[in-house]
Image (tube, rainbow, N blue to C red; front, side):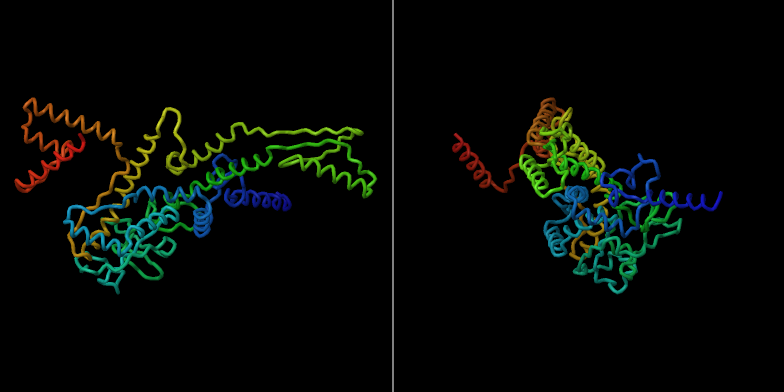
Length: 457
């Protein structure tokens, strides 16, 4: 190969490499040939640096309502109603609730979960007075005294400069982080509530680590990163529809333009003609030289919107599906087709959120509760969440009727005694027990019921 041919080949290769690094968010307004576009005729480009990706998703979170909803909706649903402490006395529950209010625990957890979805990871540092000068050492709950838990600090992933992972194959924590370096300070993982973004591996792996960028050990990726191109396409489709609305009425005026002599009078006449045509059009107009003496032809060319609304909705539905959020929750879309109510979509979605809540959030809250209980001077509680999907009053009434029928049938057939039937009915919330202490309480309760019956009559 001659020198000139080699130079030409190198230039072509550089152009190809430059094309491969195009990203939908940085170049193509249509979203085609983006970093994840598998339909293009070249390899998808590797992601940019981690800092550039963090800045991109952060800007999207604050400027794009779609990105904001994708990040915040699952977090809002997961923490709907917060959590409650059980298996301890009421006065102890009040102490824990008071500690949560002082530490603003619910808000800290919510911000940590939001940052985890936005940037790929976040940790919460538990400021405990015990061994506060030795944060690199493990925090043992038995060393925590009442009043030791002072604060909770939310720390984003990018402030963690290094994660040390256990490489001892005989250790139960093999492959899991042991310490985190935050602003130059080594901190043991027992002092942190860790929301890691679900990486496939906590160690650098040739096949399990993302290619390109500066992958950070111990953390995952933003939920927005895989759908950057879908965000671009959904936004670009609405922008195209907006421009189409602006072109809804186009007027074409064909007439003889007498401007050949270049005189000032002819130019003024042509300007007046153009101004007249513009005034009769709301949006756009054009004046063309017909080339025919004395003939003027004005034509209105309306724009056909056709299936534009369906196309806009389809792109949003694809975006909602990519974010694993039902369209009824993401855009408030009325359900259609075989799903007449949309309840099945929401029920499946809430089921997934409850599963994530139990597998990801509850272990961290339990880890916090151990230290919080010691600091509040109470016993170790259990943590429970209210169900996200609740039955309607009609469904509850139907369940009570079915339970009452079953209990009555068992009682009448002699399978269970009357006392057992009454106990079962109280446990199934078919009847409510009346708690009285003496005969006077019984008389007062009977008088109250009689008075209510008289008022109803």
